[in-house]
Image: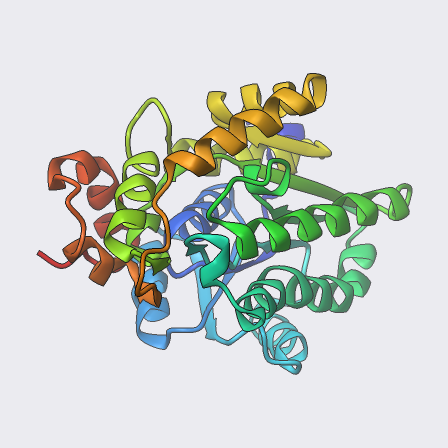
Length: 319
């Protein structure tokens, strides 16, 4: 393989939120390219299972259970990386949460949780990792934002707020690190088939919210195979691309937002009116697996997403 296209071989990578979903697949892709990979996630049991999966493919992999929202997490994570593999070359900020529901069902604490997980934690970890990445000479920092970090989709307000902020931090960091030897890539994925519909948390009328989100996150015309997405992310990082937008629908949305923002605003307003209302007795923070049991969405609609979730460690929906 052309070394220019495989410059990650022999490098050390840290991927947050890598016990399941896209993070696990990015870690697998890095390991396949010859990286030493440290996995990180909250759940020790899920993390151990993810490490085992990657080890069976021959990857040089270790794991460190850690809640990245802890203020001391960056130091402990980097200490673990140094002890096991040495200095860090590649950081992938991927950990996230998805809260789905109408605006009136969210409280300030929901926004704080989203911002802490998807903005402040990556900020702390990125700043702590910069000395390693600078010394590397070819350091790489990847931030997984979302199409929700470019287009503020309704019923995802805490999520899109945090993702917009994370994208701004990542893009600003790239500008300030030009010439430093550190490349920064911001990724804007659209919907992917990772089983995220069962890992999300739903408010308002959970079954109704699960219905639209589960369908959108699973149907082929609206969502993308997560394995293809992971390969595209790693290729973009290898090549030092400033940004990557994934899925055809996301690319169309970004172009429309740039060319006709008023038209996009009207489309989003129409979408909002089509989505479920909060109801007389709105509920809060119902796990996706439980919301599935309250939904009228036929199970066959989410078949592809459910299969992906089983492969990638997401919770299973209730029957």
